[in-house]
Image (cartoon, rainbow, N blue to C red):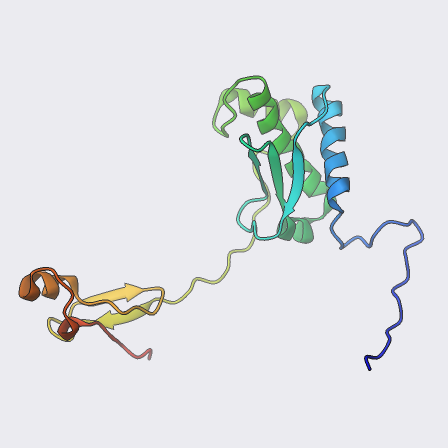
Length: 179
């Protein structure tokens, strides 16, 4: 039988703790409020969290009228910075809605960002450590190859030269032990 745990106290304000991301309904209301305040119309699309969006703070897809916000970005920088990114993505939406180009490098987009106080780009996210490269060597000619994954390849030069470009197990690459 599993042990019962004490329930977590509910904050007095009735809101979730500061580190918990807002619910999707709250995201949607943020977008609608910002769109009304800055552009005078409601945002007709959807806003959702993207838990795996790690290298960008957010993005807007005109085809689906969806704004995705990075959940790791929210956890790192908090509500205020995430709302600023949401405003940036709403600027993309607004230009698309007006039938204009909404790329980052257009003067119209840059002017819209300045006019509404939206950031040109998000704060930097730490990059994951680079995966090490595995070294392989051809047993025939000694050519060296580097791959990120374990592979079962043969040396292209030797296969072309000695077997007409077809795979030949004699030229299968041999992993070099890491030192």
